[in-house]
Length: 125
Image 1 (spheres, rainbow, N blue to C red):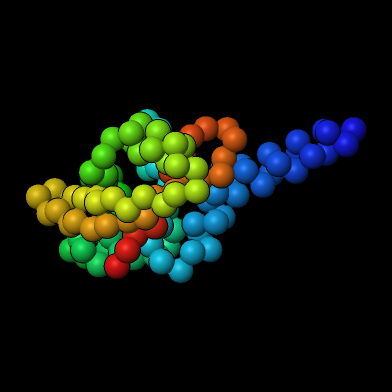
Image 2: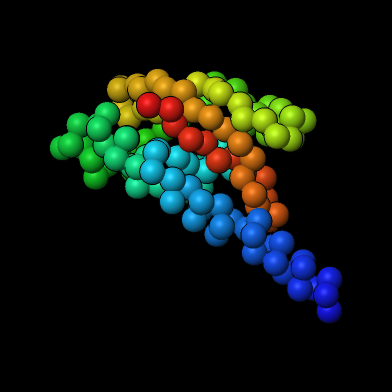
């Protein structure tokens, strides 16, 4: 019974929902990407960051055509973060919409999630 309670507590603390709540609470732009390179979640500050760099008349189409790329492969980033458990890795990224490209830097950490491997990325402005 004790082990079941502790396991449930650990699963709640290290869940996808908790990872999303963590980046949502962050005042600076942040997002979560999965091991298969999908953008899984982003916070309002990241959405504002993207909108600042995309023409407002194309804002509705932006969510469908926005492309996000990190300078290293996601698998390499996850492997390095796992190897250096307490590390934060600073890496470059690019997001693009149609012909427009915006470069930036972010701090990446492993997101606390037992269901799958996720990376939490915090944009440095």
